[in-house]
Amino acid sequence: MRAARPVLDHVNERLGDLGISFLLTDASARILDRTSSNAHLLGRLDAVSAAEGFVFAEGEVGTNGVGTALELGRTVRVDGHEHYAGDLHEFTCVGVPIRSADRRLHGLLDVTCAADHDNSLVVYIAEQTAQQIEQRLWAQQSGAERALLDRFVAASRRVRHDFFVISERLLISSPRAAQLLDGTEQALVWEQVTRLLRTPDVSEAELELPDGRMVVMHGESMRDGGDEIGAIVEIREAPRPEGSTGGGRGRPATLPGLVGADPAWLRACQAIAVRARDRVVVVSGEPGVGKTAVAEAVHRHFDGGGSLVVKDAESMTVDGPSAWMASLRSDLVGVPGTIVVRHVDGLSPAALRTLTSLLHGVHAQGWRCLVTAGTQTPPMTAGHDDQRCAVVALPPLRNRTNDIPALARSFAAPARLAPEVVSLLIRTPWPGNTRALRHAVDQAQTVARGSEVHVGDLPDDLRARAYRRRMSRFERAELTAIMDALSEAAGNKKAAASLLGISRSTLYRKLEAAGLNLT
Image 1 (spheres, rainbow, N blue to C red):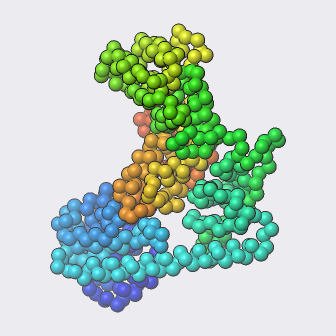
Image 2 (cartoon, rainbow, N blue to C red; image 1 turned 60 degrees about the vertical axis):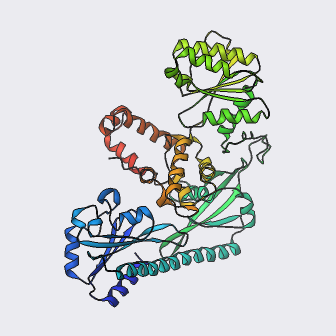
């Protein structure tokens, strides 16, 4: 609004009464401002609710100059009957997205006039005016960055400790702080700093670095002309626990082809690889955590270790148990390698006993045997010595949010993810775990223009589900319980509150605190 208002006032004054109006919207197609010198046109716009506060998203209104331009991310002209809604047939609308210097979508300028297929001037006016707004927007943003740099220079003269200056998009650090933060995602640091600044009773926050070390941060908000532009943060390495070797040494290495540095994740992956040498391993976990990916990585870990056979136990219901088992036996010939059987928790007790006997038999012949199951581990050791089978659970993505930036960037490669995209992904609940994260990134890439994915490219439902802030593990666990109760109660909030033993108002408050608006 600050960038657009002077431009719109000037253009509207220069053009006079040409019978056009300017609508300024945010990135969600909500009208923020409306300007026109034509009172009759304003009245017609009022009649179709084209006024401040109303939303013209394509999902709500159908094809129109605002919502369709935002969906496509480019200039769109919609004439008369090209509008989906009949009430809009009397208008010609041209929508032009407005982006910041980093190409992040901020909103849209729509120029509307009476329906006229031959009016070519309206497109020129819309694009030229939007360009002027973008230039002012870029100037304002570069001003904030200059202010951050000025604060950094001033702080370097007076701050004796290691420190950095950070905003949502920028990080400037002293040499020692740069060494400490080497390899750490800027979005992850910003989320941690933001949470620290917004928690009045907390003065310091800890951040785990990629190499396993911990650092302690103390932050102070920075303002310029009343607007918050970032924070200045003092940073120091946390004391190592007594007996610790430090420096990340002794930390389990990841398996080949896998992404992630979360300690619990690495320990689980290493445990699976170690136990696969002499036992049948049940890899358990929630849907989408990457059970099959880990099992296949274990095969790659044993370089040159024979063939990889992957079978889905769910297909047994189609093929029949006898034919499925016969097919599996025929695959397990030749040089022993790795056999991965997926979804064994859906098997009948009889089929599970037969599979268990088969796996223990081929394991004795040198095959590495891994099976995947949900959180309810199947009784794979029934009728056998427990020492011949091991169960290892993989942590859900909500317990390893520090891995989200690296996972998302690996899924997006070779495309880039804008920092605000990574920030939003960190704040998003992932009941579908890593599989859901990959699906969201893939969806965003299909609509992204160019080689960088922006927030506007992410699915609408994903942006609606994102928390307003990054949550602690306890807060995420509490919210998971609430979401489970809502699912059990088929969305009935009163029933969900009763299941949880809390009042409905408390339920609403906790959902609101997380930034979730569930209808």
